[in-house]
Amino acid sequence: MLTFENVSQHYGSFRALHGVTLNAKEGELVVLLGANGAGKSTIFLTASGLPKATGGSIRFRNQELVGMKPSQIVQQGIVHCPEGRKLFPQMSVLKNLMLGAYVHRRDRAGNQKMLDEVFKLFPILAERREQAAGSLSGGQQQMVAIGRAMMGRPKALLLDEPSLGLAPLVVKQVFEVIQRINRAGTTVLLAEQNAYAALKIAHRAYVIEGGRIVLEGDPASLMNDQAVRKAYIGA
Ligand code: ATP
Image (cartoon, rainbow, N blue to C red):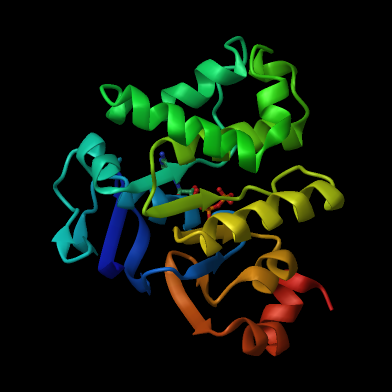
């Protein structure tokens, strides 16, 4: 469904991605594991077209994404939920959510339907819809970020470290919602450092180091892999 083939990315003369090849099939939940600076965010940013890949091909349902404008990529159904949430803290929860619907702004009925779905996923956001997003807890802010991405009507949802800075119980809740979104039919790519929680909900996973895919496998085999345990699980 979403396929990266030999994708490269550079920041000036620094090469951040060295020929990354990976894929997510329709309906899959695929995890990208990697330490800080491994290139996970760069993979997602490159899929979203900002910045454009410096080499290789990214295809979604057989359409080439490299060269498309970021807004066209969102319109295709590739929606990125960035690391660090990137909310507008002074704006209300509702306004933040509606920003995610920008590419569908003419379809008011469709957006209302999506908003109802987001409020079903995150009932707390319905209660707090008029509250400034910046006054919510970290976990609630992450829910706004995921809700905003859902308003973009993703076919493939790219989630960048949604567990960052959250307490273990909140991480569990966030991951349960991610699993529900996936089970309802959205393909999910999930970049995480929290390997244990991520592998528990994954269908498949890749390990990224220094801008390269170094390992791919099913969650059980990665969970038992000595190097993965040592680097990401700490056991
Ligand atoms: P983290 O979880 O810490 O965000 P990551 O796996 O998402 O890590 P990236 O943010 O993709 O990693 O960074 C990959 C590499 O590219 C790092 O070496 C980083 O310093 C570099 N990099 C990222 N963005 C830029 C930029 N805008 N300009 C220059 N170098 C960058």
